[in-house]
Image (cartoon, rainbow, N blue to C red; front, top):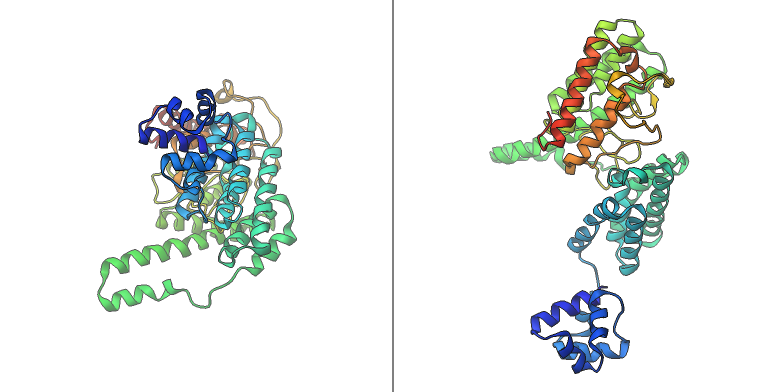
Length: 422
């Protein structure tokens, strides 16, 4: 409720001064000024006289609505990332809590606020990007989700369970995550599996093409997620034949679907390094960088997200169901995939002017709403990580490594200058 703003607007519409309003309701001009600047609120006994003076109801004066419309909830939630960026983590958290307190009956608002966890880290200030703050936001999101699931509207339960499962996975509570995942419904028949055929029978070629693209993206996304899991599992099991076949299949599938996560090239690089084929590893490194740059800068139809704290699907859409991240591994953010933590070493020439790399920071992109500043953050994180994490640092000094790092550096510069960087 912001009664001060309402009074300002009503007074201007009526064409009266603060002094005229003050005289009409029996208060001083400074009192009206304090109302309008938010320093104080009118006494409850003055609400009716003020409402009568402006010819409105007390509900209108207090901006009261019986239910928060979804469109308004969306608008209010979209303002929160800017508060995290502009005013800091604490201010952002307080705004979330204030909104929920103001509309305690809006299950949809609670769901949307909880869903911010999937992308919030990119909107934190540099000094706010800590594990402690992420854990705090995650705990708050889980409180809201559990409120929805304990007595909220059933139409939001599926989405709430999906987000909650991802939050519990991030917090390490795998049993609760599995319990919610197993409760998610599995449709017996997917309408999209039959709609393309219906469109063909009707001769509606435009609709047939549109539905088919949606089906291909959905199931292609699921296939790529499966590839990520298979590659990670096969690598840990030292099933090199499967890694070789799946990395090639992942690369080909991404190219066909227009996705850009670089997972296939990453595992081809790992294999080349394992086989001590430095030339092949260098070539894979360059292609990996090119793929990531194209994806982050939006060349592809969709793009994967560098994800360490929030769920997102392979093509970068952080939906309410909270699907698994596009990479499936912390290949450039913490532990090197398949190799364990990277060793400490001297900085390369590329990194001499770079700020210290904080291994606790993992960036998460905001899906299809990714903006230029987010792209710069992600690209800079890649540039730092490539020089500090296994297996990339073993390529330092090679022509392929220098060309790849130069590509990243130039892309960041073009992003900062306002270009697409690709």
